Amino acid sequence: MIAIASDHAGYALKGMLIDHLKERGVPVEDLGCGGEPVDYPLYADKLCRAIVEGKYERGILVCGTGIGMSIAANKIPGIRAALCGDCFSAEMSRQHNDANVLCLGGRVVGPELAKRIVDTYLDTGFSNGESHIRRIGQIRDLEK
Ligand code: RB5
Figure 1 (cartoon, rainbow, N blue to C red):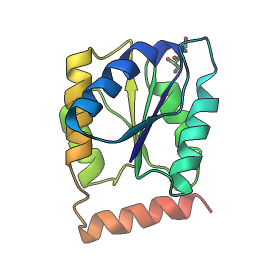
Figure 2: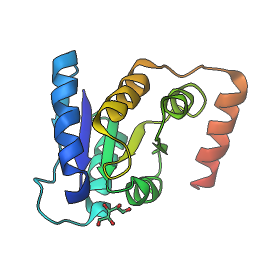
Figure 3: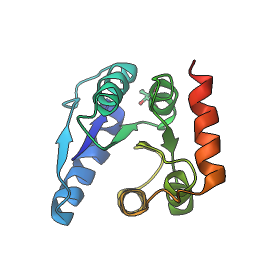
Figure 4: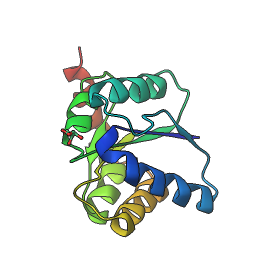
């Protein structure tokens, strides 16, 4: 099960991504917003805390640029959020960084590119390479 959340600026893209995920048979839960003007850090917090608590395997956050969501998400210990505007970054975010949150900019990427980025992100596993495990451990150390 994955979670998705957005602010008002990411709301339209979020809806398209939910439809896409359902078509793909990926179980997804929408944690808001409902399109009304909201503050993105609150939604980043809600989704990321649920991931850290183990309620969801991974999450997708959408705001206007994806920047605010990624800044907020990466403040939460245990979260490795990747802002991606291309498929290569999405692939590397999983293989090298084991990113557990994908951030997208609803005012930056079009729906078709966003769907491909999401597919790449969801379909790519962590490499389990020794150097990447070590570096992720070093990131965890930064949280202390
Ligand atoms: C909201 O207008 C906008 O600032 C927000 O969606 C996001 O782009 C912030 O990083």
